[in-house]
Each structure stands twice: as structure tokens, then as C-alpha cells.
Amino acid sequence: MMKNLVILFASKNSSYMFCPDFDGKSAFDLSLCWANELIKNDLAKDLVVFTDIEDLQNKNESLKVVYNSQWNVSTLFQNINQILTKNDAQSAIYAFADCPFLNQEITKKLLDSHYEYQAEYTFADGYPYGFAPEIIDVGTCGILAELAKTNFSKEGQWSVKKDSIFSFLKLDINSFEIETVLAQTDWRLFRFNFDCSKKEYFVSCKELWKNAQTEKDIEVLSKIATENPAILKTVPSYYNIQICDSCTAKCIYCPYPKCYEEKNKINPSQAKNQMSFENFCNLVDKIKDFSNQAVINLSLWGEPFNHPQLLDFIKKVLSYDSLSVFIETDGQKITQSFCDELKQIVENAAERTNGWQKVMIAISLDATTNQTYQKIRNVQNDIQEVLEKIKMISQVLPDSVYPQFVRTNYNEEELESFYRFWNGNVIIQKYDDFAHLLPECKPADLSPLERNVCWHLRRDMVILTNGDVPFCKEYVLDGIIGNVFEQNLEEIWKKTDDVVKEHICQKYNSKCGNCDEYYTFNF
Image (cartoon, rainbow, N blue to C red):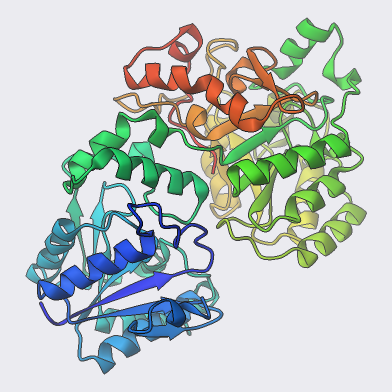
């Protein structure tokens, strides 16, 4: 087993990697402990740290460090191949250095499987992220390094992320011998992430460390996590904000027009309420302080392009490099001048540290034919007009514009053609009846066999133009639990803690009991 080399990747974008919150040790310290234990047990011959942190060597002079200011997938494979070859090692045990729970037992299982089946790449499947490394063969790294310079040169420029190796392998997955070690229980539906890259994950790690005591069995650790509300629900990572309440469409899958009319006695096409830029700026500052990293959607219950300061809103969000913008729109009001200004804003903004693009735009189409488009959205506009708008804004955001399709009984026959037309670069949403507020219209039941704690309660905050916060999106304009302009975010966020505890015990109020959105997720 001494033919292995441990390679840890220490990224400057890992915000909490060096925080000594684990009995005086940091996630970085604990990942080093894991690596050194592998060496001590003859499972590896040495440790090398890849990093884009210029002064990392100063933190530990004994570390063998490979520094690069601008890592990408291509340089990652090149360097893994070179360092393995230089050290006469056959495989790399690869992990990120911000994972405090890297596990000896699962690492040994991965190595045993890797060599028994003469695999080129071996990974753990079904476990929460952060417990297990990946194993990759030296020859495979050489091949991937070459592919990253030739056949997949564009993909070779991808920035290094937690899933970079497997994501690149998938481009030509049938060419490689891949093995997996399966978890006894499939934990993927919980979407756990036990690293210290973001505040939401860091909080989960601290809570798991506090509750795990000396427990090392990762099945037990995973079970502990599923029963702890402080691990399941940390801080919001997705803020769904209504910046204006006007909307002219009456999409068959949207409850907003009916709910708005009932509450305000006018149609949303006549609505004029808008969130002020001053209030929005204060809110974004609060979000940065509370969540640190997040995606901010400017499209809750209204057409965001109806707000005259939409570009200013985008610019404010992008002023923080840990925040990204998401916009859902019908695309009708996209103009060339808007695109020109947006291009300048995006180019001037720093690269994101949260793992997402700066600005992402979903354009609602829901069809490939004009007839279906008009039926689904209850409009007279021609779909061709929107296609031109998509082409226009895609020039500015070439990899961040997503045609969107909500599956219903009325457009299901066009789903495949829609997917093929856009080459899979789309967002496909399931139909949501908003806990029976809308008629049943979904063509297929996609819900899992076992129900888990609602993802949206764990990670989403919904905010209306006046600052009111509904319990969740399913309440539309009701179920108000606080106001972001009058209270701090943490105070409001805690208002749903008791419901999360009920979900853990498989108890659901009438709204939650009628809802099947619990397994869907945003960012």
C-alpha cells in the first residue's frame, strides 16, 4: 500500500478551513492528521498539499506544498501525474483539506477495492460529502491531463471544485475502469456536506463534532446528523426575494395571480409595489453578514424586469464576491441596452467564491411550439420573440442562461424535443400544486419512497417586497413569520426550527402534509 500518495487540496475559497473550532484544531489540522495516520499505517508513503494560498508554507514549514495561483482541471491532473511519477507512486488518495471528518476505515475500503479490481478511479457512493477521499491512478491522471489539453480543452479550464475529477471523467466515462464503495444506507437525499468551505457547512461540521464525541463510524455519524436540527438547518443559502409585485402572465402552474387578487382586490398586472433600492441594499448587507455565501433570486412573485432599478440590484449583490444573482423571467422585456449594461457589470465584478456563476438567468418557455407556449402561460406573445431574447442575453452570459420548462399534463409531449433543442442546457421543474392550492396537473409522481426533512425549510428564505417573510414559498403571500426590515435574519430564521424538529419525527402540519416539494432544492 506504500505505492499511494496523499494529495490534499487547500483552496483559498474555503472560508473556514483554518478556524480552530474542533477542540482547538481546524479542519486543515484534522485533514493533516488523517493523512499522517494513513502514512503511519503504511497506507500511503507521503503527503503533498496543492494550494492557491501563497503563504500556506508559513503555517507548517514541514509541509510539502505545490503552489499555483490559478489552478484549473488541466493543471490539477498535470500536477497529480507529475507528483505521483516523481515519488514512484501508483495512485493518489485525493481529498480537500477543509474536511474534518475524513475517515480511515472508508479510505482503507476504497484502497482495497481499487487494487482488488485494478481500478483507475475509485470513489465512495451514498455517503455524505467530506467523509471519504477519491483514489486515482497515475496513468489515468496522465490520460486526463492530455485530454484536458486536447479533446476537452474547454473543460480543462474549469476551476478546481470538490467534484472536478469525477465531473471530468464523466466526459468520457466508458473509457475508464471505475469502482465504487457503497454506503450501507443511501444518505444522498439529505444532501449533507461536511466540509468547511461555506458557513452553512461549517456550522454543520461544528454541530456534528460536538454531538459525535469520539464516534468514528461514518454510518453512525450520518445517522446522528439526520436527527439533529442544528445540523440539518444551519443558515440560508438561497434567498427568494420579491422586488416588485407586478406580473402580466397567468401561467397555469402559478398561484400568484389568484392569491394576489384575493388579498389586494386587483390583478397583479395593475400592481405597483416595489422594494426600494435602499431597503434592498440594507437587506443584502444583512444576508452577507448572516449567510456569508448565498444565491439571491430577484424573481419571487413578479416579473423582475418590471423594476426600473434591476441592474442596480444586480450590481449591489455582485459587490460581494460570495453572493450570486439568480433571475427567473419571461424574457419579454430583455433589451440590447440592458444586455450591454449587464455585460459591463458582470465584467467589473470579482470572481465568485461561492462556487456559482456571477449571474444566472432562467427564461420561462415551457414549450417548443407557439400553441403550447401561449396555452401554458396564458399570453398572446409569440414564442419566437422570446427565442430572440434568449439569443441576445446569451451573448452576455454564454454559459449562464437556462431555458426553463415546468412539466405539466399540457406540455409533457414536448419535453423531449425541448431538451434536445437546447442540448440539455436547461432547467426542468416538476409541477407544484402548492399543497393542493392548484389543480393536480403533474404527469408523473417523482417523490421518493421515504420522506426527509424539507430541503426548503433547511436552506431557503422567502421575502416579499415589504420585507415580510412567509413561512415558505408554498404559503405564497400568507403565513408571515417576520419582517427583514424590522428584525434580524437569525431571529426570523429560527421561527421554523420547531417545524424542522417535527419533520425529523415524521410529523407534518396540514400545509406540509399536503406538499411534495420537500425533496426539490435550490442551489
